[in-house]
Image (tube, rainbow, N blue to C red):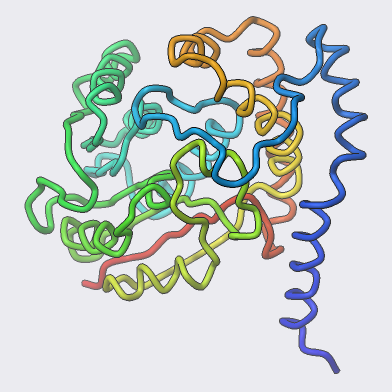
Length: 305
């Protein structure tokens, strides 16, 4: 009898090949629906850039947000809340524009945000104040590979879509372990599967995508006990990426920083409505959580007592 692991591995490889080669047909149908809803075709329908052609955005110049970003953050908050009670002190390592820090503060946590971009530090502070949680959120400049925090000073660490930007991800994982109190946990999200590397990885400044075993090994070597690694984002998030986000990113990369900011920070009413609908659709992906496929990985690991 063929082992189940071999069957799953075969299905996984077939899925990757299908995703990279066969969505063009689905795209024609989806583009027609998109045009009917928004009155125009998908943005950026020009020729694809080849690897190495994608300009990299300056970190902190534009916050890449949208329905996938909001959905992923809801998964991070859920995984953290299942292991850490409200009132705990959470380090948001690489907090970006502060959306995750605000979501955590609204759940009753005290949040310390560390961010390398001065622009994002200012944006995150303003967002926390506007949300009415400024008293529970403290944002400051810093690097995830050299955290300016005492050893064993926080109850948990959350780090969403950060490690793929960091050249020395092992150093970052070691810093997460250092600042955690014994028994504390870390929750991270990263993009999955090197085979899914495309234009948007280069544009966003990624240096890698992770295999499951690589992510687990990274935190095991840092001293953590890995409790869970699960995929997220199959199939609807993958379709969204291929058919909506990827074409948008190609067009956005040709615009000025000011134009990119305007498109993200001041979306039209129709785009907000479509984003809300997509956020609901993405929850269908939870039905496929047992499969080793998806857009990214979620990991939870714990520091020993």
